[in-house]
Image 1 (cartoon, protein in one colour):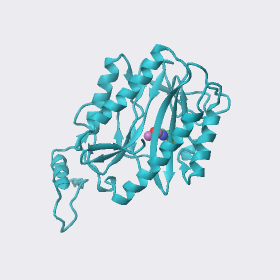
Image 2: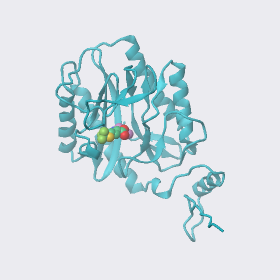
Image 3: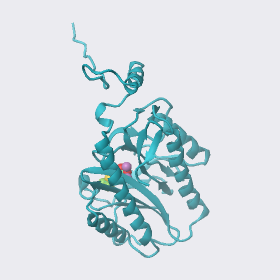
Image 4: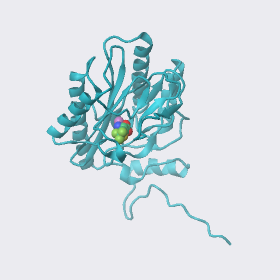
Length: 290
Ligand code: MF3
Ligand code: CO
Ligand code: CO
């Protein structure tokens, strides 16, 4: 007779403790076979304060970027601003040396979906749309956010893409107006909006838990079915960061990129993305990178 493996439950009420209302709600979903968080994903008050402070600095970094982004500057200029501002305020840019990433932030222009590498040769031109993605470590805590910048005046198509990507983030946020929703509820709403606008959602990359580490559970996919993926409960911190393509959703690497970080749209169409770090509370999400 083969031995049957018994899967230990993800959520357990500690010995001798009275289950809280939250415990009971999570246990109920767990019994129904849904993916529930593990307890370490529910942050302590101390962790939340730390992540909140990292979020405030990350926002200030992106504000500093917003001040200097302009036609004619290079993406390396942006990177220098991110490095200088972050370190001058006691933080560390999380991307720098992260799994071989060579810079302090990601700068993704036009058909670059994400993980674009700042460099001296990439000069911002009128009409470009560029995503700047910053993650700040402060006192060991992480916060992650990105914004789109439009250089001068762009085409109506590009402007629409930037706007729809923003709307997708806000729609994901609205799904999280209450706790005990599923990651798949977010993705379903985001993809619904993108598709209704004739655009597509990148599937190969997703949002993520963040705060104690750079990339944690859950995976926050930006497409999918309602009721799938992890249950989001008060105390969890995570990103939503939809990458929206004007053409097809397929992505590919850049042959010339030795780091293998840069992600492009396969069909060369434009891509846009916005990102925030959120805290789920009893009353829905709070933005920690505002
Ligand atoms: N900030 C990105 C994210 O949203 C991750 C960048 S990883 C890096 O998850 F190494 F490229 F910076
Ligand atoms: Co990011
Ligand atoms: Co992120």
